[in-house]
Image (tube, rainbow, N blue to C red; front, side):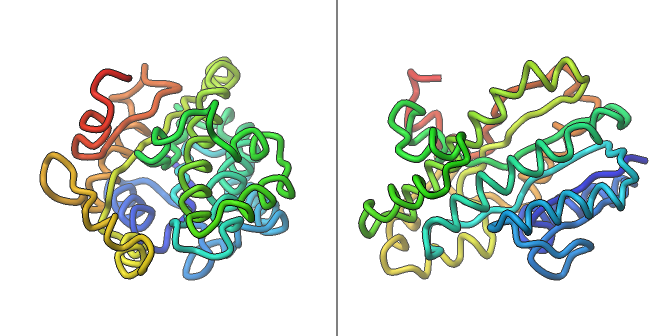
Length: 257
């Protein structure tokens, strides 16, 4: 029976993942803004450090799995909060819990990125390098000059940077014996999606975003992919981004992969 920490455990993909893992017999530590084992606001440096400390205390410095589901969509204001939770929050949890994972049993970490992570390349990611450097002031400056679509710049840019962060850590984490991967969902029926559909700026574009399979994903379908990446069936999968998007990535860039 493994002990697995999950951010964003209150709703959506995080809640579905927590339920599936408990069904499998694992123990979980949920982290969220409320309604969780550990209450933390990952948009602030204090919240991030507090979340890491609380997980370490609960797990006794030894963790078998980590799933980072906490994230904000493009409708959230200010846009800086999107980048803070999606990238800074996730990276703080990864780096802060790395050594605890290295002491775990068959340890694995899974980060929830997005199919939007490939809508911008690293070379054209206007906030990526600043996020990687931890320069929050620079990120905020870029977003402030991004106009009415700053939320989408923050969302796609932070998810692109997050996938890069996973890949950059592959060598170091592999040497520690900890597998690290990302999943990239497309549109998933979650509260985050519903907020986007109701937004006057983004709603129509989201409605028009239809996967080749003709529907949106259920949170449980993403949870199944996460469960696979955590388990022994994926023991040689490391440093990759696993698309669970109904064919959106293949549709949008069939010759680039």
